[in-house]
Amino acid sequence: MLEKDKNIVVSDIFRNNHLEPDIRFTTWDDYAIMSMVEAGLGISILPNLVLQRIPYHIEIKRLEIPTYRKIGLAMLDKKRISVATKEFLKYLDRL
Image 1 (cartoon, rainbow, N blue to C red):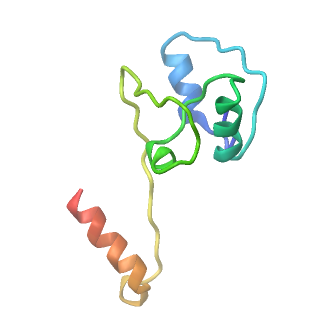
Image 2 (cartoon, rainbow, N blue to C red):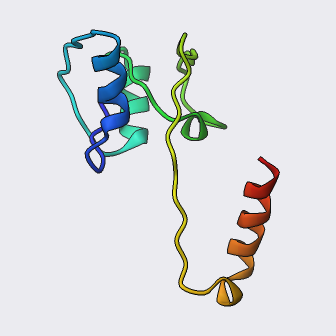
């Protein structure tokens, strides 16, 4: 199980579906989880963005009930942000 910054998203999925997984390994690294899954040590729930263009030979399945998380963006002054941040904001506007 991914244990990063009090990852309540995955814990909430289990709780909301009345599931009690037998968690034997925890890590803060997505790639370590994918390596363990590839080695047949279990399954995991990971964000879609992490699972794009991965070098691992793992089967990726979608949850029956999609789950989303909110990501916030904070800045001191929108006029002084980097070009990359400006492009990212344009991308968010298209979603």
